[in-house]
Image 1 (cartoon, rainbow, N blue to C red):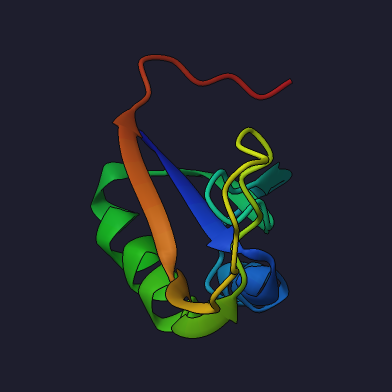
Image 2: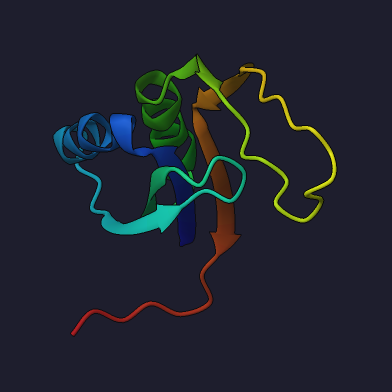
Length: 109
């Protein structure tokens, strides 16, 4: 058995949840926050048999799209003597970060 841990942007969360159910995968959703953009994410914990890992990976890949967004960086509050002019920066967000780990033991009560 494997545990697939998928961190996805909140915008893709409901769509992924629906697709996983449609394909017969059970998942637990956890609210999480990204470190760089400090934006909302959802972390999915998906227990799956080893022979279905590629199938669940394909569902994630097909559902979670990467997109560009423009952000304005926060000012550097530590150096008041410097002039700070925030310039918008375009960054890539979305998609999914996925980890697949071995499960030594599984129990459902």
